[in-house]
Image (cartoon, rainbow, N blue to C red):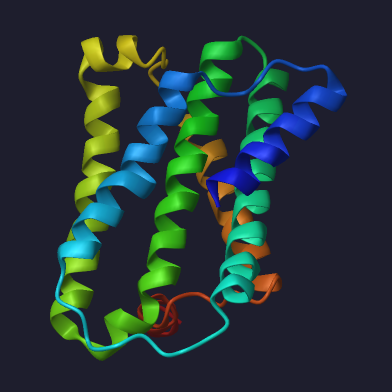
Length: 194
């Protein structure tokens, strides 16, 4: 997914002649929160048995390419939208783009774990705790000034947070249109709210 994401950004930013929307250290932060820590934690979690025998490459591409492209487009769209707002520069736009990337990345982790979460209540609780912990870590990066400064992020205001949330919701909706329905627990949660 990271490869499809990077290819989307490189091609679009390269063709448009625009600046790359994220710094390498920001990409490292996003990768740590959406790939590194979840991969490590979920690899150590108890499994529910042998995985089904499927066409691995086809299934991998069917999930990774749309997930990476949608993430890349969301980052580009929110970066551009933030830059178009008055009194918002590159640091603010990169901050919004990073938030969108992390939110969409964590949602993709939930999609990958949906079936395992349904089959094991313990794993479902563990995944939910992991996602909440990673969101807290993201908020901590913004709350702790030396970390925010190291990652070259601005302190987002309400408009920027709203724009990031809209970008993430739009991406999640687009993934749904592409055939990736929301995780079961999220569908149940939304059904209760109606």
